[in-house]
Structures are given as structure tokens and as C-alpha cells.
Amino acid sequence: MSFDLLLAGGEIVFPGVGVRTGSVAVKDGRIAALLAPGEQASARKVIDCRGKWVMPGLIDPHTHIGFGSNETDFETESRSAAIGGVTGMMTFHRSNDLRQSTGPWKERGESQSLIDFGFHFGVTSKLHIDTLPECAERFGVTSIKVYLMYKGASGAAKGFTEIDDGLLYRALLQGARIKGGVVGVHCENVEVIPVFREPLKEAGRNDLPVWDEQSPGFLEAENVFRVIYFGEKAQCPVNIVHMSSAESLEIVRRAKRPGRAPIHVETCSHYLSLTSQSPIGFLGKVNPPLRSRNDVEALWEGVRDRTISTIGSDHVPRKRETKGPDIWKASAGFPGLGTLLPILIHEGVHKRGLPIEQIAAATSANVAKLYSIPNKGHIAVGMDADLVVVDPDREVLVDPATQESHSDYSPYEGMRFKGAPVRTILRGRIIASDGAVDPDARATPAGRYLHRS
Ligand SMILES: [Zn+2]
Image (cartoon, rainbow, N blue to C red; front, side, top):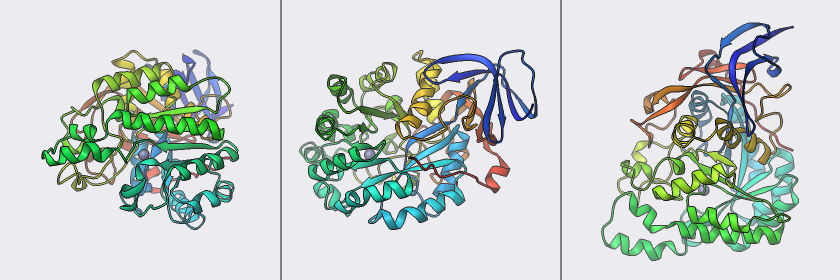
């Protein structure tokens, strides 16, 4: 049998299981065979993978496509993803009426995205709750997000007037009824934030650490407790997205027990690498805030003991000019799709000795499982040939000019990470090589919508 593509003699990374030397053969966009060392096969194209990891393409569980430019984000941000070894992304879709907006947004992605993409629905009103079963069915969406930080005045400023604990509980009841349903929640107690913020502002503070001081980790932990308690009562799986603090993790560990509705935890590459003390100024403003070195280490421990099951980037591709003029007015969030994998290899594998298969699990297999994404996240015969070849020893210097993003900065700019994707493959097609988008993939992007059941 002749194959379309052969990734020859690499270290194949099986998520959560281990690493084994061998070759991956691809035909018609799928993994067609796994060959032991020495087994011969012919293919139209052969890539020598000796000394390289061959991993499942990453599926970033948390991105905000459209926050940079509605018109072009799918195009630019999926290029940035491809360079970074990411072959799938879940992005948040929010609108007044999801029944009207989801179809056109999906079509835009299908015409522009270089990588596969799926949606989480942002739920901000009772209409969203009421129309959720219909939208879940029509668009194959099983995951929603509730934004507890947009309660009250902070929500009103964004046009959200219905977010309260009642809406959260309705979302959980509805989420429990959807097959494979999971409710993600942004946890931060915005009602208490002003208690800290007002005196800090009066004192004239204008620095990155103050963002953490005005919304300390225990305000996240308090919301986490409420969400998992309500989740248990509503018998709905919950997902604490972008977890930032050690205290939150501890609450989850205490609440987990057999028989209750699952509690999933996601964290992000920045909470595993940056702190409020990182010398990056307003570029580091994000919600929830960057925390302390102690929180970073605690979150890595959570990845290691699997309390944390998925890791994303919370990619927000706005321009540098929005990151000011002061910490209070600067926009929150920053780009991260292109740097997700190098950061996790550098910080996780090289610095902390985590096995690569665990990083692979948190960025592919666990994401596919949590969000019911079929045929992705594993290296096995019959799965989509979404693969990334990684040089564990190659260093990348983060330069926003080479990231292809709508965004023109990175909180990691000037930093070096060891561990770089050298080939990114989507359903058997090479979409990026050595930090550059493949010209053919750029000309004819072929990302597909991830319709989940
Ligand atoms: Zn959030």
C-alpha cells in the first residue's frame, strides 16, 4: 500500500499514555497505519522525524476569534495557530440572538480558517437559555459559558443586564439536559472587587501587580465554590475555565468525589508561565489576573495530578494600542495561540520534568473528549491526521512580527522558549513549516467546522 504522507521514525506521543518510536502513515486525510521501527512503507511525501516528537495537533479549548477584527480574525488567527502547532480551536460565540448569528459566523470560519474550529456559546440572557436546546441541536454545540464577572454594573457597561446567580442556575439546569453538555464559568466575584479597587485607585496605583491586588485569587475561589456546588445540585458537569489561583484548585480537589456531576478545570499558558511581577507592564492585563509564583507552581501541580484537564490560550487578538493608557483603562487579554505549545514544552517538560504525553493530553485528547469532538485528539488508525512534528530542542524567540496575528504585540515578546513545532498537519495536509504558513494553505484555507453531537 502506498500512502500520501509518511512521518518517518519519530517519537510518537500518545496522549496520557507514553512515547514510542515509529512512523505515522497518512492516507486520504486520516491516519492509515502506525509502523514499528524498521517497517518499510512508500509514500508520495516522506518527512524525516528522527529525534522529533510526533504529537496530535493541538486543539486550543479557549480562544476569542472576532475580538481583533470580525472581518479577518478567522484568517489571521488560524495562521498564527498553524505556526504554533494548533490544528483545532474552540472559540466563544456571543450575540443577542444565537439563532440568527451562528450560521453566518460559522460560514465565515469555513471560508477563512486554516484550521478546524468549533463554538462555545456565551450565555448572557434568558433568551439564550430558552433557545439553547434548539441552537445546540442545529449547530452541534455542547458547551456554553456564563460570565460571572459581568454581573451588575460591570455587565451593564457591556450591555448585559440579566447576569446573576439565577441565570447561572438556569444555565446549569439547561446544560444538564443537553447530551454531552458542559457549562464553563468565568469565576471572579465582581461585587467584591470595588472594595479593593477603590483605595488602590485613590492611592494612584498604575502597575501590573495592582490588577491582581484588586481581584485577589480568593474572589475566584469563592465563585468556584458556588459554581461547583450549584453544578452538583443541578447535576450538570461544570468547567472552571482559565483557572488562575492555587486556592481555586484546592476547592476543586476538596469537592471532587465519585457520584457527583464532573468538575473540569482548564487553565491557560499564561497562568503557567507569567506572574503579576513579570516585567511586561500593561501587556499583562488579563481577567482573571496574573498571580504569584506560588500560584504558577500550584497550577503545574494541578496539571501533574490531573485536577486540571485542559490547557488553552484565551487568545485575544487586539492591537497593542488598546493596552493602555493606564492599567485601569487597558484592554484585558492578549494573544497566545502561536505560543501555547512552546511555552508548555519549555515550562512543563524542560523546566519541571512533566512527560510530553501529559502536555499532549491536556491540549488534545482531553479537549476532544470534554467537548465531544469526534475523530481528534489521538494518534490511532482511522483518526483525522491532525499532527504536529516538534523539535524538543529548538528555541523560539517570540517576535510578534512573525506571529501572523491581527495583534501586533505579545506579552512574551523577546522571550525564548525551547521546544518548537516544525511541521503542522491538518487532515494530512501540511499547513505550516518551521514557523511559516504554507503558501498553498494560505491561498486555500480548508478548516472545517466542528459539529459536535
Ligand atoms: Zn473568561
